[in-house]
Image 1: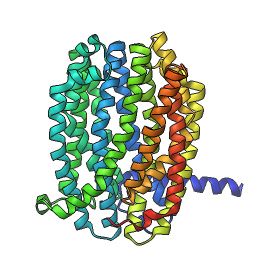
Image 2: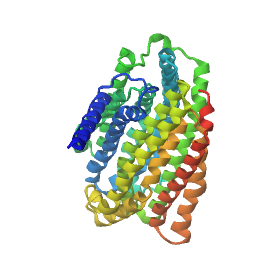
Image 3: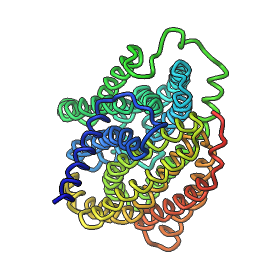
Length: 466
């Protein structure tokens, strides 16, 4: 009986901690229990990116009802939009690292200043991307291997999605600022708001405008999320309060941010670029049906990876703040414990994909051939999920320390010098067809995870200055 009461007390303690994390109370993550710090940061971060997962899956659910051309358009467009994501995540990584370091040093004024400089950089970068996307949308789909009918039906969708790059950039970047400051609950709420607006608007706008309605709904939803973020940045409801004086250009701070951001941007461009190549390889090898099945599977892969990214982002914040507080050993302990939790979560996802891939894909498509490809892709890709979980924590920990060059090199060798050649060898030379492309994913991700773990344990990240 005493043991039962012990478990009940532990449950209530955990529940109380979760409620605190959702309220968004200010907390010093450089002191006290590491487990408690992980929970306080990770719960809202996991929920934040879970809603981003829902964002993606909802789009695919409603778009899937428009047929395989629509599915292929969304998939190919998203493959290109990941370049925008890469730039946004790169800048977000720099902002998180610098803001977290300043917060760890108990310097909130400089943290807010660094956040504003990152926003100025992002707005400049987004203009060129948006203009190029609006003008070149049909050409982009053609280069990606889309058939003429897919280009005809999907150009408007692609044009709107790429033209609205600014809201993608700001949503990711501002949430990175909040995460670096330890205000994970605000970041969570902004993405919840964006996702819920999209869930409501997507079926309505698709009914009115067809495929391009999905793009309009997504852009509006994200725009509302950005408005919510800006409200809190300017009002000062968190430890980050942007004021008029922060809008001035600060070249030295911008250089420091760019110095962290450009490797991080290339880091994600390298990764997303490899996914684009794989998407093209699948499309050219198996046609529109294979492409549609693969894109449905990838949406589900993303759905379950993003919550794990939430846990990884907690590690980045803990590393940055504890290095700022001159506690490198606590930073390392935080990462190793976070990696353990992520591996446990990913083990459950692996089992889910192994045994329930078919029913999962059935939710998104009734086409027999598309379903067959999607199920196969999900099962094969799912075999590497445990390594994905450990690897992403190590990568994000290095990023949180401001050591963005090491993960960039890991990605360069892991994706471009290993995964892509392996995919071509398996698909073309060994005549394994599209399954060869799928197999290359878990194999490469496992190698990347091992490399990241080894380099993290060497500890050079502890000496990086931000």
